[in-house]
Every structure is written in C-alpha cells, then in structure tokens.
Image (cartoon, rainbow, N blue to C red):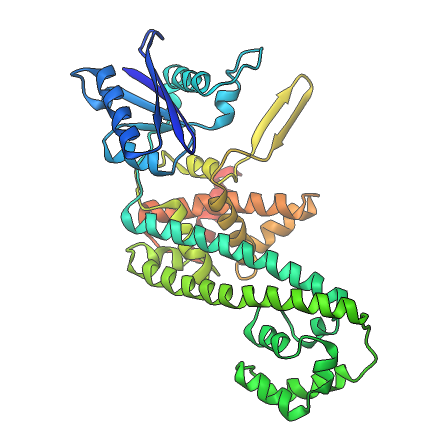
Length: 404
C-alpha cells in the first residue's frame, strides 16, 4: 500500500508519496491544469508500478473541486481528512510549507488509514441537487445582506417606508421604492396613483393598502435634510436594482430544485417529513444522498450532521461540546427542519420545551432535537419508508417500557 498526500491550492498542487514503512518514494509539484493533472497521474502510476490503483490512497483536505473530480474519474481512491487533523501533527517549530503539508497528509493516511472513509461520488441527480441547493443558499445569503443594507439606508433618510409594507424582500415593496424614492415623492402621489402602483405589482389588497399608506404618510414623520436625502435615495435605488433580479433568480432556482427533486425516487420519503416543505426536503435529500452503504449507522450521520455532542475531559473538568467538524449545509438543514417540526409534531414540541426547561439555550435544544430526528430519518431512509407520527410514538412507548 502507498499513501500520497496532496496539498491543493488554486494554481498548483504538491504531492508526496510514502510506502507502508513510511519511507518517502518521491514528491512532485504540478500546475492546476490538464497538463499538470496528467503529470500527477504519471507520478502516481510510477509509485505503484504494476500494482492496482486500489493500492494507492490519495489523502487530501477537501471533498470538492476540479482536482477531486479528476482523481475520481481517473480511478484513484481519495480519502479526505479534516485540516485540523493535519495541524495536530505539525512539529513544535511550527514550520509549514506545501511540501511539508503533503508529507503530513501522507503520514496521516498511513497511520490512520483504518479510520478514514473513502470518498464516493454522489449519484448524478443528488450531485446536481446538492449544487443547486447550496448555490441557492449562497444567493439567499446575498439577498439577506442586501436587505440589511437597504433597511439601514431607509432608516437613515426614509424610515416611514419600513412601516408601509410587511417586508422589504417582495416585488411590491421594491417597485414602490423605485417609483417613490423619497417621502416627498410618496406624499405627492394621489390615492388612485398608489392603488394603480400596487395593482401593477400584484399586491393582494391594493385598495386597502393604498388607503392606509396615504393616512400614514400624511402623519408627521422624521425627515432627513436635502443632502442626506439625495445621497441615500441614490444608494437605495442601487440596492433595489440589485435585489429585484436576485429575487427572480432565487425563485427560478426554487422551480429548478423542485422539478429535479420530484424526479428522484426518494422524494416521497423526504416529503413525508413534517413541515419539510419544498425548501428543506430537497436539501435533506441532497445532503444525505441516496447511497445506502455510505453510513455505517445513525451515529455516523449524526456526526456528519454535527448534531451529536463531543465529550471533552481534562482532569476534573468534563463537558459535552458542540461538534465543530461536520457538513455545515447538512447541519443547517437539520436545525431548520427540527425547529419547523416543533410547529406540528407534539412530541417534538414537548422535547424542545423539556430541554428549555432544563436550562438549555434555544440552539442547544434544537441541536438535541436534531439528533433525535437524525435517528428517525436514518431509519426511514434505510427502510425506504415515509414518516408516520403513529409509528414513531409506538416505538417511543416500547423503548420507554424496555428502559423501565
């Protein structure tokens, strides 16, 4: 068996190979290009000679990227490790180079090989669904930042605009701000003009909303000076011009994600989860996947999802801490789903309230509830059975009798 540590970067990659005895077999630096990847293949082939590629373990600190795609397509076994694992092996001097990192990765593969998990690619549908949902989450975070900036901008010169609508991130609000960028422009508008503006943006109640707007706008309001109004209204229009197309793109992602999600054979299983809806069900499927051989048991999925605590002991000190090493998109989806489940599942609400009564924070209580849900989801997923409240409650009662 041979172990090759690959320290990846944007422009080049360093690789170093050691054998079973820990002897260095050679090293190479290759460019991040087709020619560089071909050189890496030749380097790995020279190391194994006539042996099978299965006798080479490529140890690397990432699970995605073009380098990973190339290694998997070329048939090289890839074993990802957490960067913190390698940092613990660094010498006391703190010396760090790309070649040293490659050597430490190779040493980690040789010593901890039994504990490493080989990277298996997702099915095509799951891979596409995962990328779509993660990209949409990036766009949603961008939208949130823009909304926060727009809120701060309006507070600075046009605070009454925040009271005219229930939320900023909707078409009727943003197009109203484009039409009436200052309080003076809004006050100058007649009731019919406001009604027509709201109708064009498909406001559900244009007549009633326009009437309440006129009444609110005519009341005494805080107003900025002319200079601040001119500068901030310009910024406001710039932010609105970014938000409007972004919201349309996020909506387009929703349609594409939902369409792809419905084509997967496991969609009904995840749709059965209470209040998972069109947003969380695709994310849970994308992050958990459809490879039933990927996880040894529910605890493996709990660790990857960051829901199971990590025990820390030192002398007289002992406490369970939040798990840091996990798949963050999976953790986020599980936490959001756990909170949503408390709105419809009686047992989930009671579990959450019990944790809160014990003095746990909201975040800790939700993480504990997520841990319970992972066991349920894993059982559903392995048996290919949808969620039913009665089935869970019966299992819960049987477990309570056995524990007594």
